[in-house]
Every structure is written in C-alpha cells, then in structure tokens.
Image 1 (cartoon, rainbow, N blue to C red):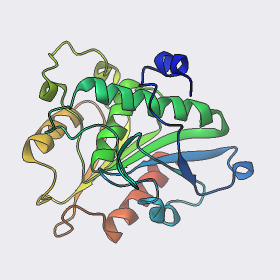
Image 2 (cartoon, helix red, strand yellow):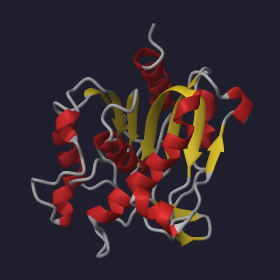
Image 3 (cartoon, one colour):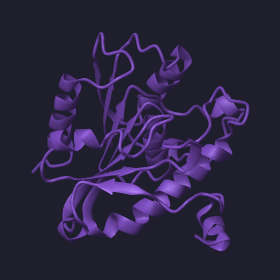
Image 4 (spheres, rainbow, N blue to C red):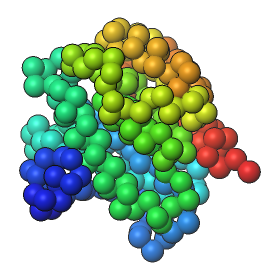
Length: 231
C-alpha cells in the first residue's frame, strides 16, 4: 500500500495490507451473498471463523483482521473508548480501511452483510452508519455502537450518515444483560441509536456473559435466512 493510496482512502499509510480468511476458494465465490466477520479487541481473524459452518450454506464467509497491532496475534480496530488515545478519527480510519477492502471484493457477491462481536460490533455498526445503502443486514453480538460524544464530537458530527438509516435495514442484536465487559453507558447509547435507524431483532441470552452461545448462532442463522435469503 502506497502512502498516496492510504491518503486517498483516509486511513494511515502505516496500516497493513488487508488480511482475511475465507470459507470458500476464490473461484467458488462469484454470485454468493457475502458475510464479513469482525473480531473483538485483542483477537484476530481466526477467532470467529468457527462460526462459518453454522451460517446458511449459500453464504461466503470472510473474516477480516483489524489493522492495529497490540501484540503478536492480537489486534484492535481502534483504541478502546476509555483509552486516552481514542478519537473519532481512529474510528473513521478503521471504517475507511474496511470499506476499501469490501469495495475490492463486493462485485463478486450478490450482497454484503456484516457481523461483529464486541468491538467488532462497533466496527460493523460504524460501516453501516457510514454507507447506509451498501449492506443487506447487520449482526451485532455482545457489543455496542460508537457514541461520537464520547470523543467530544458534537451533535453536528457528520461522518456517520445516521439520518439516511430509515429503519429498514435488518439488524440482529444478541447479548447477555449481565455482560461484564460492555459498560452500561455503551448499552444505553446503542439502545437509543437502534430506535428509528434499523429494523431490530433483539434477543437476550442470560448466562452467556461476554460470549456467543449455540442458541444465539442458531437465531442468527434464522435471521440471515429471513432477512437476506428471503424469496
């Protein structure tokens, strides 16, 4: 990646080439719906690929690696919101980094759905907030949507095009109400954001903590069949 290319894409030149795992070889992807997976903080692209076999067979599954290195095998999309170096610029850079990759593969597929776990849900929701018309559906698991006010961005924050989300985009949100990781302020903001912006299916899973359960993934499969593969 050249510095000029990174600047055009609006993400830092030091961000690496994109790394993704795929459920199908390239010659078998054309004409399939794509679902892109976004891992949580401190994880990597291999973390969620075990879910691929539980999605409807028609889907091609890709799991993307976050661009910022924390340690060998551990990555983040942007700094934790409680960190001193968290800014909305970092969220925007990660969003543009992912969109550049999606744009490079989109033409092969009939649609693109995004699924994120924990911080990966923050990434997935940021994508649809930036490009409201580009996605067939959104799945968030044990995560949240980013509140620009947390980084002292005012009510006139313009990068997210929330006004264009008219409540028709199908979204599945699964979580444990006693999740020990996602703080109440993040849940409260996300609850406010989903109202009027997406067509929400929200299911709680007592006892799973900050994780993903078998019944939850079964519900995600049903959601994908109904919202993306309908008709």
